[in-house]
Length: 493
Ligand code: AHR
Image (cartoon, rainbow, N blue to C red; front, side, top):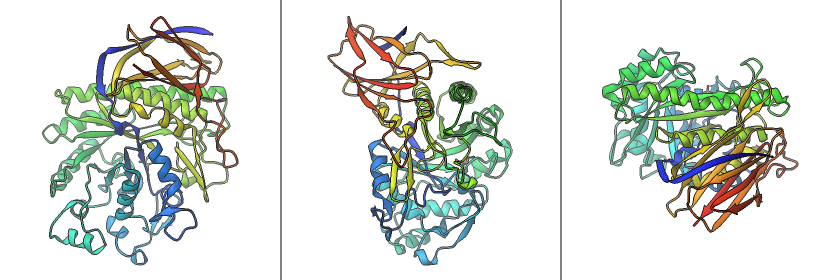
């Protein structure tokens, strides 16, 4: 077993880790909303107002802080008025982006707000800039947030919601460089300026406006956007970055992959760090006072769909490989929490790197779900300075074997999360707490073979266990971190 040192300096407290970093994304895509979340009140699957109880409970368990909706690409073709009022009268449309299926609009604004209320999370609405109008978005905001006499507020009341909802997070478009209108950054910047003007703070509701940011390494987008918004700064810009071990045409299987594909996936997950750093550097040039946050409101692994499923539904299984890339990515977000204020994994149920999969009345928690649970105490804690003397793992492509982040909660307890993506090597990590003493220590371990996953026949194959592979020695903790695993360590004074 290789020995490495890891330092955690509780005296060096850094940025707050916004709980919204642990956010999720739900789109009218495949079986995410319909079946995965919303089954309707008449369903035999236990539900409250149409929302699956099992899914809502699971999302509460990981303290889901924020949920983005209605897309994705779907958002820029979504007309919110189609999804309100009596369900029989709601317009049926074609979901052109995702499988060409009929969208019956039975899940709309009221249902989304109900879902967020049941989960106890903030709603994050992505507005339609690509094919909508300023008026349409302004009216949606009026419909949701205005507490008084107005055409939209009256319509809302007529539809059964007397009091307005609170809406904080508002995305002005989605991927407007692509499916949201194929715009150039200069054009989008003008659009953003125009739209944001009419997205009003009504009845004491304060919007947190989010501009469409770049696609992964498109640094030019960030540069041009930031330079054109200087006197109309959004609260944040939204970056999208997906990990694909292969190419768009052949992304690779979610469950059947080689060690080469495994390390390639790790390599691409680690790239998130450099991508964030470079965008932040550009942002800092234009925003010296550090007013604009970076949101990564779509991230995760994107593989080929499961054989036999609709290619437009993006349904993929989820293995230990996904758990490790989630652990690496969340550690990266924590480390950048001075600028990264929110992140939303794509997507919450049955789509891409989902935390939950459903099949009829069955529901399973994926390995990625368990990472969100093991990391949940990082939410709203303060990042601590930490450093690991790392080793490289891999074959042709070499990556850091270990990734880590540490945070301190208000009660003084520390959470240290470590991933080991090395498939061959266990590590003995000597955690040096720089003189800080703790009386209580507990740990959890998520470990499996790289392609281990939970199935509908057995949903408990990859699950965290209480872990005692550590000992305290002279103010240090000697912790074994097995190959292909993630460990969370909780320390109390
Ligand atoms: O998450 C799937 C799709 O990926 C989203 O709709 C889009 O925004 C992105 O390209």
